[in-house]
Image (cartoon, rainbow, N blue to C red; front, side):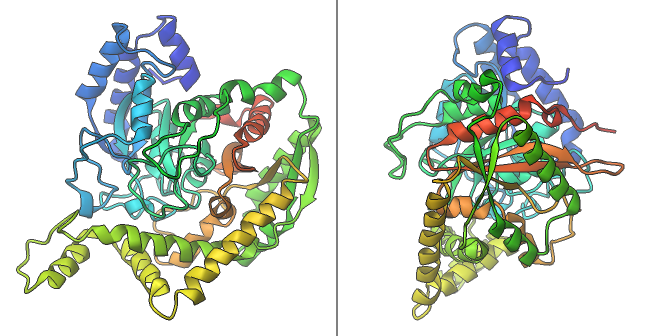
Length: 494
């Protein structure tokens, strides 16, 4: 049984047209049949999921997500199973508690069917850096799903769940959403509690949803958001009804009054990074035309420090990663070598050598170097100053527009291994997404087209909103979705 969209699944369960047990069994059957090709999951727990589904069907578990099968990225702590971050360092780690996002999902009645693959410790743009094997794109299994939340995006696209959860540090939800043809949202920094999210870069990480439609994603966002005293960066900001907010332009029948900002600096930064694929540019131009036809006004805005975004990100993120990952030494946390050692320094060294993969080691070394004596001001402090300028650019731009639009990724899904030997090329995948994390804004990717060819690949429209202004962003995405059909397409398995 193919799984419906999230809201359709929820409503069908409520109307007793289908049971949660039937939907969860359908999800588990699809995983059994196809995940050996996709490798979206690190682990599943069928018995636990079926028990939860039975409780929903018996009426003892209720809530806005009651009975719907959901997948969660394996860097969110759960009190059952393992939380591996797709790393040998945490291969056998069992968390003693649930992340706040996990707790909220289960309090809302969701049935978590499994934990999804990711680039090790969320470092990467292709999900090829997992210690447990790379995830494949359901639209073409010779290609990557994007990263680092590629497992969550692929699990949804492959029909293994009706919604999924990822984390986004530089584009790790939006880029795989674009490459897999789904909606993906990075909420404003502070909107969703990071308590229980294994930290990569603490000032950039944010948890968010994947779904087939904007409305489905809005519902997941409603469940995830809210102040959490367990996270000192969680913002005590009111959470609107995002599902209702998303419908306002559709109900008005027009995007009149919606101002969409276009920043020429995004184009310049992309050209410096190798340019935008012509089919991606054409799909983006067509999406803008659709929004204009329905009343939106396109205005030019300026983000003059955009060209420094990638460089600032790849100083700030590795610096914070080198600090956060220092705890994994084989004594406090993580894998401990079984090899004989002379002293504790050698114990640390061998444990980290065996536990961490190449990309994690690379970023730890970059961050440690940038934070070292004599280089702190030259690199980290300078990057923080650039961060402030980028945030100020967005504040000024949003005085002229409601949302800023760009392609989500400069190119569609690339082939597995195509960029593996060129880390810099891989880093440039985030050229359109990374500044939103640096500034702390909200942003999302919405399907807006497909490439030509024998196996058409999805293309995403990137919408950036001001901090804590998710509603306008959702309205723009929902209006676009209501007059197009890209979100209805599904990959077909052989």
